[in-house]
Image 1: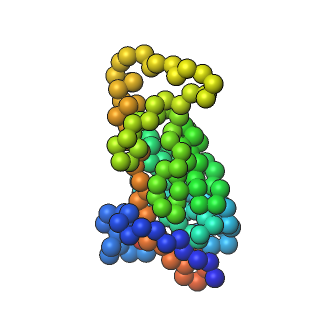
Image 2: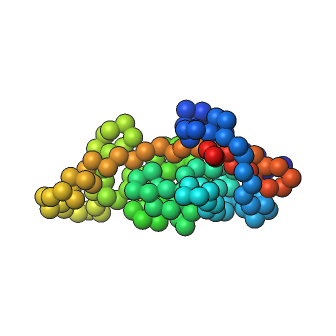
Length: 158
Ligand code: FES
């Protein structure tokens, strides 16, 4: 039997408490280490078979919304294809800040990444730099999930 990843209850996606479960893909099509995007209207959900079990979160990076489904999965940590941010599906927390820098979920500022042996290069002043500095990495939002007759079902708001 495939296990389901336990996630922090406070990170459950809004509107999913009484949401109906909808079928997605056969569980055999999501082997350990695999990720897939499934869509419900304009809602894109990432299904991930992590080392702690199956998880369903928004298929939008908590940084700037890139699709995580085409990134990488290592154990429980998903890597974003856009700015190298890495996020722990077991906790919902970022484990590596995106290379663009910005704000951690608690509001702490992280500068733009640069190689350890180089002086940080100052960003040119302007609204793009300000936007980068004010971009806060969020935590995941989780969708309830179950497996019925070998099919993964996800609870999404109607
Ligand atoms: S969009 Fe994912 S790290 Fe920037």
